[in-house]
Amino acid sequence: MAIMSGALPAPPEGGQHRRPIITAAIELTARSGWSAVTMARLAEVVGVSRQTVYNEIGSKAALAEAMVAHELDRFLSVVGAAFDRHENDLVEAIYDAVRAVLELADDNILLRAIASATHGTAPELLPLLTTGAGTLLTQAKTMLTARVAAYRPPLTAEQVAVVIDLVVRTVLSHVMQPSDTPARTADALAWLAARVLGVDAAPALRHT
Image (tube, rainbow, N blue to C red; front, top):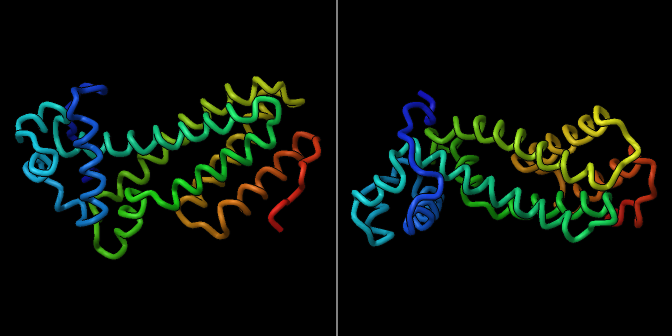
C-alpha cells in the first residue's frame, strides 16, 4: 500500500510545533528508519504531547507527505536564490541553480534514507520517491518557466519548455544517482543551455 494513501489532512502551516516535528521525523528516519518514527517518539523528541503531534500532523501518512514537501521547499528555495544572484545572465543562473541543488541533495538525509531502502532501512518510504518526484517535476518546471521567461530567451515557449524539462529531469537523475561532482554536472548543463540559447558560456566547461 502506498504510503500516501489514507492521509488525514492537516493544516499546511500548522502551529508552532509543526516544523520541529517534521524536522525531528526527517532526522529520526535517517538515523533509525521510517518504522522507528511514531507519534509517541516524536512527541518525546520535540517535548510535546502525543496529541499535539496528531493535531499538528494528522497521521503518519500525512507526516510522510509533509516531510517530502519540506525538502521540496528547500530545493526550490536554492533554485530561486540562484536566479536572484544572476538576474542578467541566464547561463550562470542555470549553472548556479544546478550546482546548488546537487550540493544540497548530496547532504540530504531524507533522500539518503529513501535511497538506503534497498538495504532494508525504510522500504515503506519508497512510494514517496515516485510521488515526490512527480511533485518536484511539476513545481520545478512551473517555477523555472516563469524565471526563464524574464530573460527573454530567443526561443518559443514550446522550445523553452523542452529545455526546462530536459534540465529538470537530468538534475533529478543526478540527485538519485550522481555520475560526477555537482560542479562538473552543473558545468555540462550550463554549457548545453548556452548552446541551445545561442550564447557563449563564459567560461565554457570551466571544470574540465
